[in-house]
Image: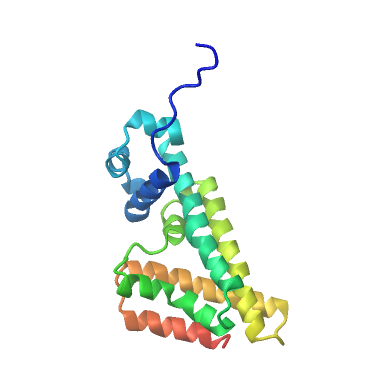
Length: 195
């Protein structure tokens, strides 16, 4: 029939990508099978492949979704919140601890997990992870510069790298159920460099 473009999709792509992201976030790239994604989304293989392509395509879409929902949210909190700069930094650095012990979320950070899980094997994943880390590091510079206005831009950048490295390490360690006090100590030591 002329002008026919096929049946419209009967699902919300963002909702499905959120579910796919949850599977990869929990199981990792290699640990996730198509059957896991089908079970989480309620979609059949054909629908998933038509909408999102291969497993790799789904993984990259899930990482982009995480960047939009979580990484960009962190950037906004660090750069546009009306909270004082020290509060913004403390909130950001406490997130790995709060997620695990207050919210009982032991998945860690999907970006950090991807860095350890798949980035070394896949250039697209590596670029995606790097972009997320770059955004966070750049965002960390703003409150640091507000707290330490006499510091050079180079010193601000190095301290942003330090905080981001500790943050990522805490995310990974929290996933391994490392004692809370050890993570609190690492967080406090890192913050002592800028506060």
